[in-house]
Amino acid sequence: MMKVLTVLAVLAGVFSASPAFAHAHLLQAEPAVGAEVASAAAVRLSFSEGVEGKFSSITVTDAAGRAVSSEPARADPQDGRVLGLLLPGPLAPGVYSVSWSVVSVDTHRSSGHFTFTVRP
Image 1: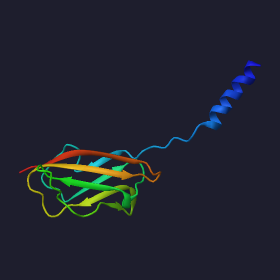
Image 2: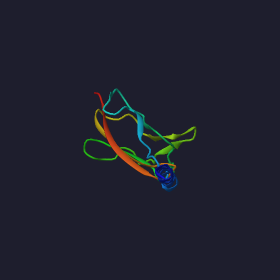
Image 3: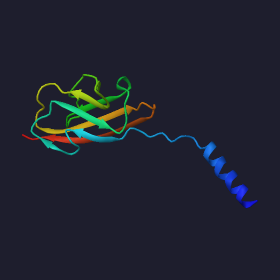
Image 4: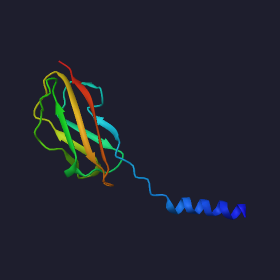
């Protein structure tokens, strides 16, 4: 009897469990998180799963909080896990903040931020 109850409990757990969905996690950034760089022409973010470009964004601001680009972020057509933002011309030396928000292909939203520095 105990074996039957154990088997039934295991089966009930297996069939009632909902699938686990992951969120897109930032795996790599260019410029790298906390990096000091000589220049930056773009921000390129790689995530753990595909992202929906039209529902995702990257904002880069200078030390005064001003956005440095008005362009929208774009998903890489070759790799759906990559989101990029072109920056206008060379950035002045200083600290820049990157804020990102993505909707993954499984419709979960993730966001985060980091800084990088352009050396004089």
